[in-house]
Length: 180
Ligand SMILES: [Zn+2]
Image (cartoon, rainbow, N blue to C red):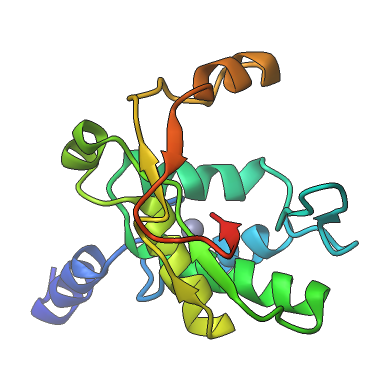
């Protein structure tokens, strides 16, 4: 093997890789996975009306599910900002006009979970969201009271039960909040 080929091979291995498929990339995801991710977005706007309207960016499955798992469980906090950008752009397309007095409140992690993971993915996602929307964030808008078990794999009633009494309003006052 000549030196130039060896160097090319080394470059290939030294480049950062896509956290989902391990292809080399200098972005959060390779182009293939980014395309797959964008295809998870709801095309009808993702706004579910009700007493508390809920905006959902996309379908929880495929590459979006893999990206969230890579973010939370494989130590890839850089993914959160990009997901925050996607969420913000989708939300802005839907609401058209950003309501006044709106603040962004990330769901807090229990201190033990925060120590274990090293970051709160919701707070990082919220920062990306705020960067695009211009909204401000209240990281202490909510307080986590108990260390709940992981929600994936639980049914909807089990999730509800699991979150009962887990959160309370924190020390930051909340006029109107977007939770992420
Ligand atoms: Zn990829």
